[in-house]
Image 1 (tube, rainbow, N blue to C red):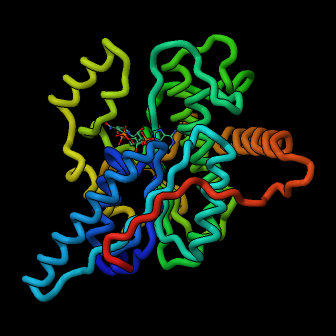
Image 2: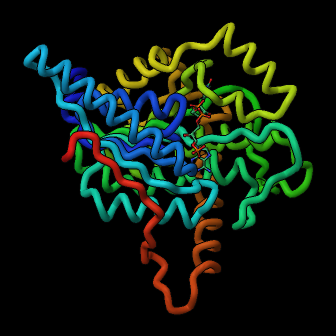
Image 3: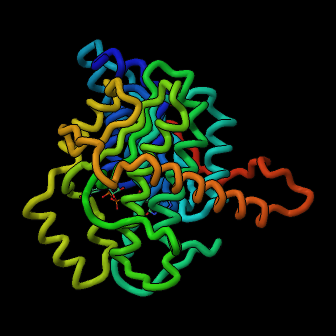
Length: 327
Ligand SMILES: NC(=O)c1ccc[n+]([C@@H]2O[C@H](COP(=O)([O-])OP(=O)(O)OC[C@H]3O[C@@H](n4cnc5c(N)ncnc54)[C@H](OP(=O)(O)O)[C@@H]3O)[C@@H](O)[C@H]2O)c1
């Protein structure tokens, strides 16, 4: 598909699109003329992204005028959503579905590691890593499937660390109310995302959506800035020595997004396809986690809903819209 796939890409949703890898992917597709919808929890970062997108448009317009050819710059929208929250993730899905009949690609990058410190619980009572790094991705993947399905080469890319043989699902206590540890919670969320991809393909055998679990390797993002000391200094030093620049890391991601594999579910570490073997990709565990997650979301939805409010009535997130081509 390659270049033609790129040209067909009209709308791209990127969670964590205001920073790091997500932002790199967003700017890439903006330069290719797509409408990019970036999601983050911080309004200031969204506003900064829109300014950068506008500057890109000016630069592209100048280059296009000079070359008398080229791809028009795209359009950027920022949607503010705190993806630690089930209701916020569901509102985000409802908003995107209501405002877009088609979405070509969904890239899931929103992440905030909590490797040290005490167990952190969201206002909805869920363990932070489970909620942000896994549950929001479950809600977005399944919630946006139908919106993706009407496009020529739909893809969900779940960016994390697929297949790494560390961590496990704590079936008896997934919220880690006992024996909490930051690394344990983080690794559980990684493994849950592996199983999310397996379950997605299993549940929707006829879907054209290609689900890609993607490990970018070590990439020079601002991720270490959010770590507590002494981890921050160590991570920054490691990033300086080892990390790939964002722009370089985006290239293999875009190649996969533009020309997805035939298989419904695949896992990659940069350009290398990973075998879907071992406990990380176990089908019965994937089904079990899917049911456990759906039960949790259902329980929350019904507990949360005032008696007079239908479960599926969308409430607007607090969007900041911006266009960088006046479209
Ligand atoms: N960088 C690496 O070396 C590396 C290696 C392997 C895998 N990965 C994976 O790649 C993905 C992107 O990582 P990155 O390094 O690019 O991260 P990053 O630079 O730290 O960016 C994280 C993004 O997530 C957003 N975010 C954080 N909390 C959020 C929340 N509650 N709701 C909505 N959005 C939220 C942030 O925006 P706000 O702060 O405004 O919310 C930001 O846009 C992650 O899934 C990570 O696990 C990265």
